[in-house]
Image 1: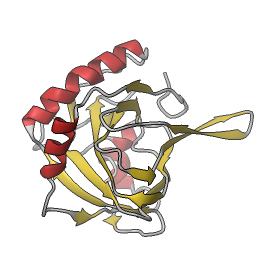
Image 2: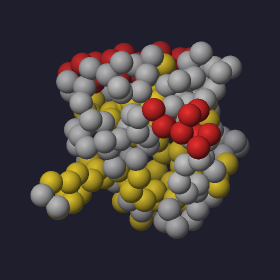
Image 3: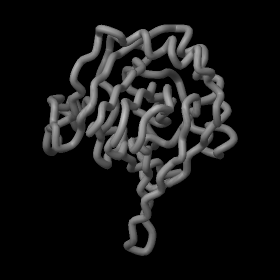
Image 4: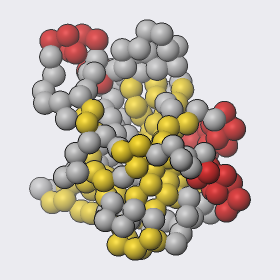
Length: 211
């Protein structure tokens, strides 16, 4: 199964209650930092062997948002069962071994994230992190986004799929408490927020690269 070209996703509607959404949001209070993206071009010979390192810097033409990283165990305990269910019911049946640090993201009015892929499934994308038994030698396979509030406009999560040289953009009508899973190679974006502030929790579940 190719993770790059599949255009499937799996959504749990309203599974996270408001109290829990607010509790997750509070983890980031006073700790926000500007988001950054990989600005590197191409791949070096060393990266072909060990995996891509990346060059992460803010880029306001590609992404405007604030982020906070968390490794709260209770949040992992909350989300992993949904990931396993989505992985099975969507028919992906991907070999998942662990998850990365989780990112709480804040998009203010005008904030956005242009079309991108979270990761590939190939050996060039493996993490070179020998000190981490959870990440070393793994790649991103399943991405997750939980919408943490509903009092904003715009900011839709949109997927791009391609067929017969045509690109189709599909916006996801998501509400507070919805959990969205999709293969990490699927192209997607967060459209510009036009009113209010959009909060989400995102994470990436990892495993061995596809042979």
